[in-house]
Image (cartoon, rainbow, N blue to C red; front, side, top):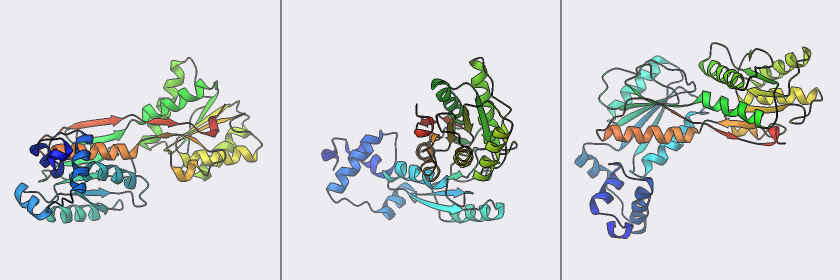
Length: 323
């Protein structure tokens, strides 16, 4: 098998067992060679030999799976080459349930744990002095010594505003979520700062409300009723943006002719149903999941990397800003 993959026996062993710092293409080549030869690793034997179970726990508070499912897909992509399984537990924002699942996963001798949720705001560590490494994904730990992987939301907001400036918009409003919400504050501040860098400012102070289409419709009504001279709206979420789009369309405003529109999250259910289809900021949730899993594997193999990593976002242009 090693010969077929063009690697040494040791490298083939590391690739199949999820050990070592190998390139993704090397692991994939070894995996393909193993499949071609019909090689099936004996998980029990591997576990006994390495003192591992080749399982990783993922604890989430995102009960609808909006964020945790893409994260898990990304984590499984990174862990699959080493034939590591992921056990998902939904704590439903319940601290008692969360500690129950933590004890359950530890009793199953998982090799490590990924903690995630539906908010990016830092949270208290899930527990102290755990016998296995923990990586926080999408959310972060309040302990700077913990390993956390988060989206760079400020980067995403800057990309949105720069895109609107690039298509010639100068009177930009911002409609977003609750003012107490970490993501809403970060995105609003970055949007305002980006305009200031260009000698501009928001058309009016940010409009804060709920993360909902209903709030988007209401906020658009507020902009229209005050006759705000707005030629673009950057929204803190796709749900809000879809509500804004609906209200603008009902008021006879053309998108993007009169008002360009950008959302945040790149949630396919929302961006594709929006009329016209919505330009949005993608946080690359699968990429965050892959990065978290890779860092967890490093920690399992004795090479932990503490601290927070913020991964850049990307802008996905669609018809709502087409010019």
